[in-house]
Length: 240
Image 1 (tube, rainbow, N blue to C red):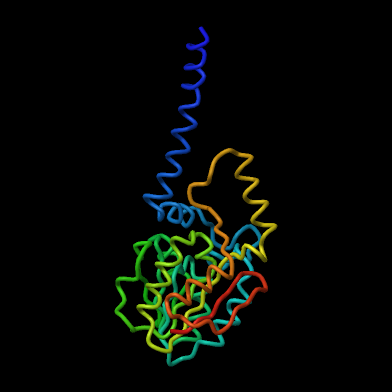
Image 2: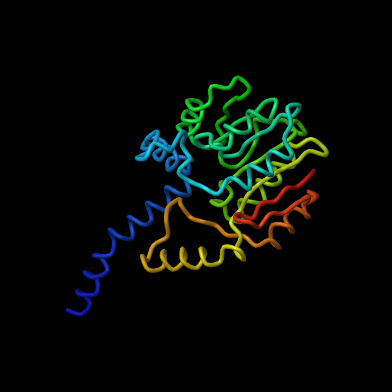
């Protein structure tokens, strides 16, 4: 009877295990589905009428925008990795000659297109791994805010290599991350919350990185750090 009880108890865990496996498989195999669903369910304006485009519900972009405005000009062409609903793109189109707004989610791109009537922006579907649509040394600026926070360090390095490839010599990159040091309390709270639930989230994993890891990657790729902000995100401005 003890053996039967043991196996019955084990079988009772199968649905939960399969459910968790399904979540993980969705994260690994079809990353864009999460953001497609998020974009589909998003309601314009929001309950208090303050949301003008998808992404306005997330804050803390002001420091990033200040840095972006400093390295942007009307003579430059920029590429945004993870444009989402256009909260950063809406500013960039006023500062750059042309913006290539890129995202892994088609529905996010559709939302961005709806919120941006500007003529100096084009929209591109990414594969989640490369920037293969763009030629070597073809861009003046590559930027990304609140996107690399979802990438593990194993994903960050190859993407930085792609960024280097598409940047012109002397061109700039500007990317924000979650800092393990500065945001340690957020890291601790998030990790313990997932631990208490006994499962890891399918997509909304927050990945924290140290400044040492990031500067080592950039140095290895021959990308020169020009400025680092630690005010909220870990934001690094680098040059090819």
